[in-house]
Image: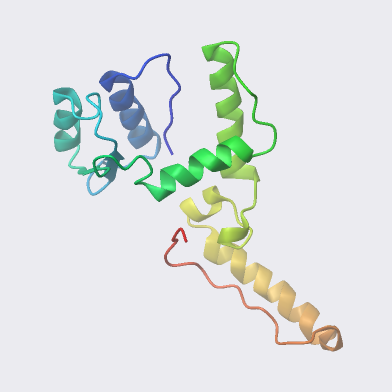
Length: 166
């Protein structure tokens, strides 16, 4: 995941964020979707050039529809209601510090119910199947030894192939 917090929106900030995210993940932009609003910054020549050179897919919100990307809108809501979101930040550095800690916690520590109580990092780095197999083995052993405590069959955890919102 890439993110940046700036005083002003500029194409150069968005392009730098994309480049750093791609480099950090050791991937190319090929096939990645750059979904954005219809603002002048996102439609700038520099941004269009970057998306084309990175071999990314350009995607825009529909005109007049401010909540056209459910993944972004879901993330905005999650950020605002996740633990102790401050009313405001006294400085850009304070905001960056907050979000650095937030994204570390969100991606590497917090276990999400929607992805079987794994962290997004565990899924991203391909650890999901291994972790779920270990979990299933432990549950099966407990179930076999304590079946009388269950009113139904044992839950079996399987990797999630596709993640959807709503």
